[in-house]
Image 1: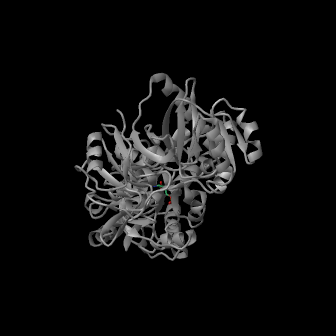
Image 2 (image 1 turned 180 degrees about the horizontal axis):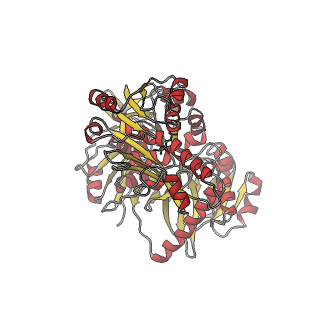
Image 3 (image 1 turned 45 degrees about the vertical axis):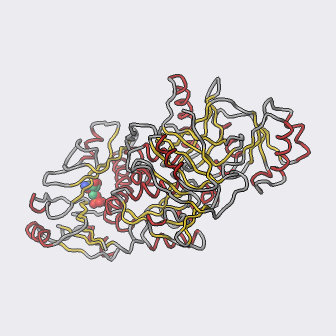
Length: 573
Ligand code: GRF
């Protein structure tokens, strides 16, 4: 149980917002302390059935010398507490300005009468001075010149009521659920595990290679998963793979007011329907290859004739394998027949024929929090195997540097993407994964995904030095603008170990021995393994990945692994 004391002297709208926000939590005890027996906040406390006490100045000091709380939350408390009192507990305060500007009373009015163009709110640790102490969080508010003072006050309070509970939640320690069972989810879980902001980590659908990182949750359906998350006071659900998104997990979590990062089922179509993506790109003049939709085998010859170098792409999800490239038109036709006959089920019964674009491919990951977009350093993934077949991804590197001119083109693309998200009024936070190609004349979008890539996540999450739980959480509460990215010093590479034959038929259940990272800078992330009778057995095409800033360490680690079905890509440089 966590104990929080809220201090309020008067109105108490922040008090009420906090209590209501945490109403489903069964692990927090709230109490109110006021110094004013006529305060309106007492009425609120009675209505919300929250225990309260009313004390005078001397009694307050004595009270704190005797009582210890996890946090003391000041919300419109007008008494100054001396050093001795403040040092008894951790006090936090909210102030309606961007501190250090306008300390003390009437901060909103000052911003208004001074015709400031912006103001905001500050949440900070409190000390014995008025509105001073280490800043925890600030949120800016642009002041519309047409606003009345009343309207400005309303907008400030709206921000306070939204952010204060969510920042308190972060300070209390977060219970987090990671959903998914690949190497991407392994690295996500590992990074979250390392965060100081974490209370308890939960895992759903994890593989045996990283199940020891957290407490496993078994579930029957998404509603059941949401209910279990609620019962365990989970603050954030991080979803790894696209299937959950396309199947509407986010919609269900939203219904139960559980924070997550991912588009709702409707906007997840950006990834799960190539046609949807093409249409939206056309609307915002985002460059992409010309295409034609095909559903009937009879139209193959006619449609292929429209293109100089055609390729085919399944309209729906196919685990990264739904693209077929070949310069030999007869094998392309043959594959197109397989696609239309349902090689990837319903996903390929509608297929796109596209003009092939040539150039270097890059992946841009951008976090969208409903208001602002945070772009990460570029990554590259290596999708094709030796035979030229598309796979889910065999290697990745982060970062990739661009020359000045290409970077300028990328910036133009980033502006268009921001416009798309704002104009389409996408309110749910999610990760935009732009699969880009640098063609001779410009940057084109090959495809969109709506989550992190695998194996790009393994490289990106190790290259960026921020607290990743903070990045995910702040994204989920519309607070990304407070994140400053900290880049690593050396590029990171990831190489995937696969079972022979991948992406086609592979053997499962083959024992793997000697999985030992060469040193503590080399990380191993598991994708498809099971542990049975103490033995580690392969359980799919991509088995594990090895990540490091030193490629020869990666290859030494892979070399030492004993696995009869072992295959991996060798990167040239
Ligand atoms: C808030 O504006 C807060 O920032 C300031 O006092 C006000 C309290 O409002 N410290 P309420 O009592 O929570 O309605």
